[in-house]
Amino acid sequence: MLPVYLWLLHFILWKSTNQEGSRDRFRNLQKSDNCNLTLTAVLSLINKIQQTIATLGFIGYLPYAPGTFGSALSLLVVILLMPSDFELLMFFLPVVLLGLITSHTAEKSLGKDSKYIVIDEFSGYLLSVFFIPKTIFYLLAAFILFRIFDILKPPPIRKTEKLSGGTGIIIDDLIAALYANVCIQLWRYLFVN
Image 1 (cartoon, rainbow, N blue to C red):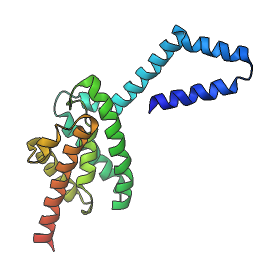
Image 2: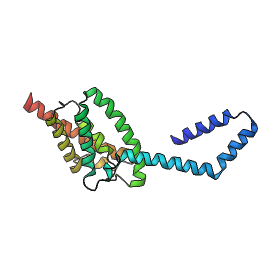
Image 3: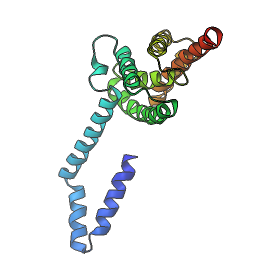
Image 4: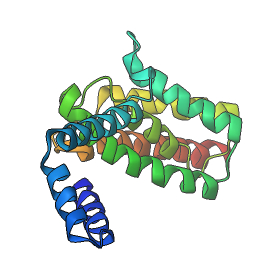
């Protein structure tokens, strides 16, 4: 996607220079080392931003249980906002999309499904609380069940980890979240109603 933006920027700048001399200066600037250095710096900054999003800042670098802390941050967001299911969906979809993109990029520098990448746990917990009452009991139950399924990885979760890139990172947590949600829904159906 970035090469498309760079090509578009090049095209706009090239078209906006009306004089032939200006176009030549732009071409020379484009070929210079300064431009390559700047492009490298921009790409490095974009990668750093994506890595920061994928690790949720410092949370992914915590020495103990960064995934649990990533899920706990998501729990805290839900407790503070108490969103409706529609609002949760409107928050969840961009988080998953952002998680797919950023974890794919961060994986290249941090390693395959690195423990530092925790945006998947953040988004997974959001899915685990869909269509359940937003009470502390249910939110904590979803948190505990989600972490259990994410850690134990019952079938087919383990197989999905082998998918490449951001998809393999995110999808296993989404399935663990579905398992947690189904367990809560079954409990509600069998014992509450």
